[in-house]
Length: 125
Image (cartoon, rainbow, N blue to C red; front, side, top):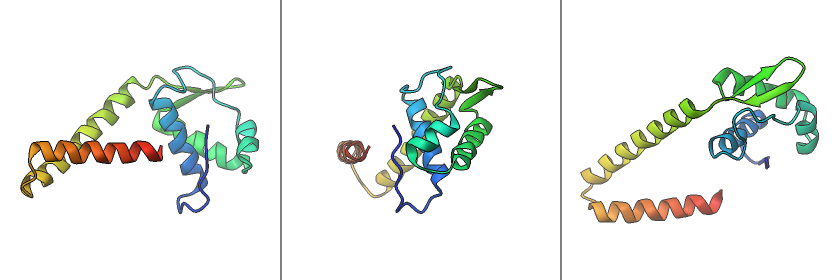
């Protein structure tokens, strides 16, 4: 479920957050699904429970999860979050397309470059 990269310069809690966000946004972890407990996930990843607690607190602050006292942490309704991420992606693509157009890259060539880049990104996921 979560693989940590100890060569990554980012803190471990950020890596945990990022992977959980990805799992939620692609639907592997669905709305209202219970997340693993702090202790069980820390044990599974062989890291300090405080690291998981920090990741969960930040995910809750950002609206990805919610907590129920005595029950645990659960995936929030991410429909608004997905819409925001989609808009962010669209904006980034528009910026890149604008740069390509200013360099004289044709629409067909841009689509080919985007397809190749997407393929390479998919290989690393």
